[in-house]
Structure formats: C-alpha cells, structure tokens
Length: 303
Image 1 (cartoon, rainbow, N blue to C red):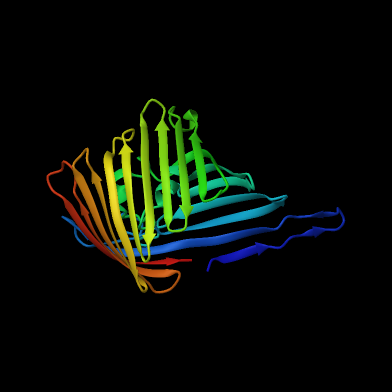
Image 2: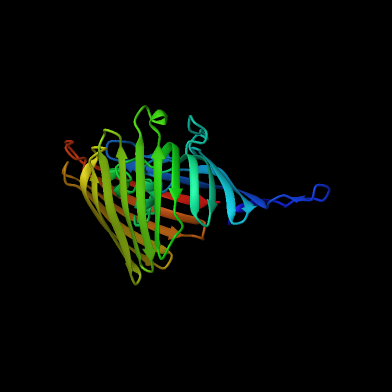
C-alpha cells in the first residue's frame, strides 16, 4: 500500500502547547503500454491516450487541527516513462490546498473539476485515458482540470453529495467559469448530474448512471456539450468480472457529428496494486474521411 511518512505530534512542555498530528504520503502510478494505431508505427506510451492512466508521482498531506477541522494539500506531477521527462509545469496534475470539517470542504488551486468527479461516478473504465466517454464528450464538455479553482464539496448525506466550483474571470483570460455536480451513490446504483457554464460561451450538461446487476455493471448517459461544441449524444456500456479478469465494452455516440467511438477493454489484476490491460479502440472520426482503429497492451502499477 501507500508509503507513509508520519510526523509525530510534538509536545512543547515549556509553552504548554501540543502540535497537531500530521501525515504526508508519497504516491504515484507507473504505466507503460505498447500501442498501434491506423497509419502509424507501433510505439511505446506512458502518458498518452493509449495508457490506462498517466504515469505520475505526487505528495499529499493532512493536518488535524482539532475540533473536526483538517488542512490538506496535494501536489502531483506527470512523468514520462519513455524518456523520464515531466510536463512543462511541474505540478500540472494537482496543486491545491483545502480545509475540511463536518460541514464539508473548501479547496483552492489547480484541481480535477466537479464535472470530472461527476462523470467518474458512473464511467466504467475508471476514467482511463482511453475512455470513449471522455474522448467523445470530455467531462461534461470540459477537460479534466481547472486552474485557480475555488470549490466547495458537501458532506455525503443519505448517498447524496454535491460539489460546486468557480474560476474567476481574472484567472481564466477574462472568462469566468462555473462547474457543478450532484452525485448519488447507494448500493448498486451510482448516478451523477453535471452542469458547467463559461460566461457568454454557453453551457454543458450531462446525466449518467451505472447499476450493478449481480456481477454485471451497466452504465449509460445523456450528453449535451453545446458550450464546448464537442457534441450531443449518449453513451452505453457494460462491465463484467471473470475472476481476476474484468471485461468492459463501452460506446459513445455523437449524434450531432455522426461519430461513434467504441472500446473493448480487458484488465487482469496481478495484485491489488498491479494490473495488465489490453484495449481495442474504434474512433468513428465524425465527418473525417475514415475511422481510426487502435490497439494497446500495457502494465499499470500503483504505489
């Protein structure tokens, strides 16, 4: 499991003050795949759309401030296993600070968006890089991250939770941004409504759900990414475990651009932290003259 470095609470007898308990965790993902796509030679990938997840490392920490209040931070950096290079902005994947209590949590900085968390509540691949839901519609019509986002997440109540995020216009090229999710999780059902809006640039909306019937999990969504001009349509999919092997079939149809993306994924768990995977992708390419087909096999290790 995660390697933890715990900073012991320090008692300062002279001042009669006791420092709060803190912990810092180093974590990451190493993911490498071999991929072949239409019109290209076979290639190695570790931070691309052919990977289950982007290779990365990060550090996060939390301090118990007492009275149910906690302060936390998270810095996360991308790393390419093909050449060891990182992103141009070191902590491009996460750089934020938060305060949390029984009332919920407030977070500020670069972070995954409420739309991302809403979509991930029901999406079948675990929001893999090759997900056809995100390749076709994004996450509620957006990318997965916001710069300079201020967000509030409610505590969970009878299965319900919500997160609202805001990016001020001065932090986004003069265009303010609002982002909201409402998530319900209870028993075999996970569902989420996602709404986001850019000032004077339209709005995006999606509604998705997944339900587990015994071992089989079914998922579907309606998508209307009008603000981002990505498309309008729907997704349907199913996932089933066969011992340590999990098979997923997922499809995303953009009815506006007449484009259908289809994914077949196989994941085999070698342990709780390591898996091998294979994926076949069909990209309908919309109005382009031809479709694109890709295949990849890879290994992912979490630490």
